[in-house]
Length: 251
Image 1 (tube, rainbow, N blue to C red):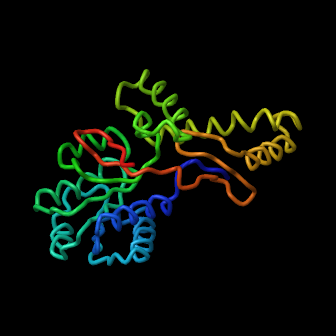
Image 2: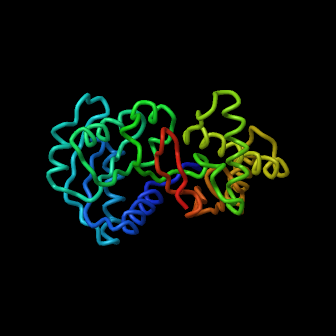
Image 3: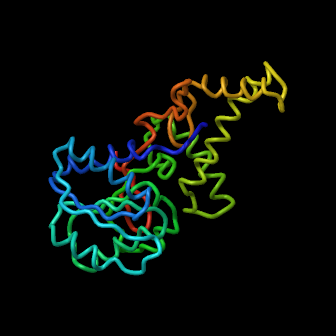
């Protein structure tokens, strides 16, 4: 099995590093009460500890909840320097709005599952100034010319927005696009060895995917192997800040 999305570990390390660089000493966490929320808590807590950042509050909420006032009151009472929200999509806007309503002034971080225009629309001005780690595809035009993913990310974003409108690019769509880029590289190699529909072709396709080296995608540079079916490194994530309803790249 091969995948294109970045791992929670990759994003959690970026968040922990940004918190550390900006003087954060304590953090709170509000996340989904499911496997996604739990895994992100584990990862971000692990790397926060490495950076000497203490977790002082942990709260959960369901993606179908309409209020998180109780959870937010407990987190705010712990007075953390930063709060990390472990959720995705529009439900992840709920804790942000509650934190702002309660006058929380510390830094707020999201995971990469909020990287879409619907989240920005629902969260509105309450998300202004908050941070997240995401793929380079969300800010392609802001990347330096030397960034190896810039060309592929710009190509995708222009084609996607031509159909769906300006500002419509979402990380989820880019992952499907990157799967296509992997297949475009691997299928011609597999066809040299076997015909589609055979076990030999499937084996050849797997081998070709595992042999991909230095392939720029919208989310990073892929170097696969038999032991690594993701092939991404630190170039696959950037830190961004939400500003005026958009994504601002943080070098």
